[in-house]
Image (cartoon, rainbow, N blue to C red; front, top):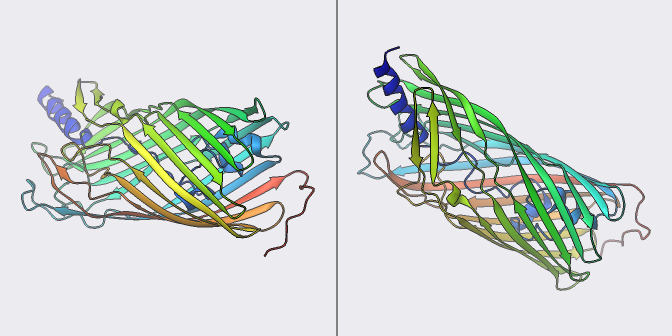
Length: 414
């Protein structure tokens, strides 16, 4: 193959990859089919009432509050509706892309094993972040993205130990498999073909947690998740004319810190809250390498901040009603935002319910609406914003307790 054709291919790669802010999601999802979805994730670091506390983004240290071994299974669906509204001055002619969203499944499993009253082991499997976008092939932003499929499956073994009556500590390991597939229209001089990017990788990290129990009604949780950086190695193809080259690039999941609180005002009402920081300024530059050259792509992402508040209301002994809201700041400005991840500030509103079916089984459900903002885009290839940028989550969960039942049977429903 002539060097000029390799150079043309490399130019296309840089254009295509500059459409990828971060396949890791930019902001971590809160939706994992756990009971904390009912409060939009508020206080998940401190509540520690079931097996989902073993989750790295809840708080593994909270497993010391569980007397028995516990297993939770969760699942559901997310429906997204993502509609771009091109500005009349957008540089590339084309349609608005249609509704780029659609349905996707949610599945997760969490397990906490009680070795002693003070020592617990945990393990969970879940999808940490995922994206599926499908714009019309001839839309105005086709040189940035046409279709995106990104999936991560993460395993998180962990251990927790009660140090004192009021302090518990937890530590876990993050093992992530990530796979991405992306299609963009090949810009001139490559003709009318497509650039197809396909890569995957395993990546590793760790997480830490601490739980402080002030008294029976009040506790605080702190978690730290290290950066996890998949190194995507795969293939890029351009058809026609059938050019192909290997590609390598790193895309980080940023480190984060969150602090959560849980406080019971009475036997019926409890308040929950979380504040957090995520180090997305780590995605300032991105290195793209091929056998024929490399380039540094400016991302210009910035740190984000997370705020959430929720309430628990218990109308009867076996019923718990939930509601909560969350706000996350935007990770990127309109000049650097791209349509493969149309993420702006985020607002979440959630409701949920938990029911103690028996002494050992609890079932729950939650609904959440997430709005990702108008996400304006203003660059040399695309100008406009999103008239719809919403996700709707419907989930259920079941939690089982193993071992001897508690000595005091549950009180009859009021």
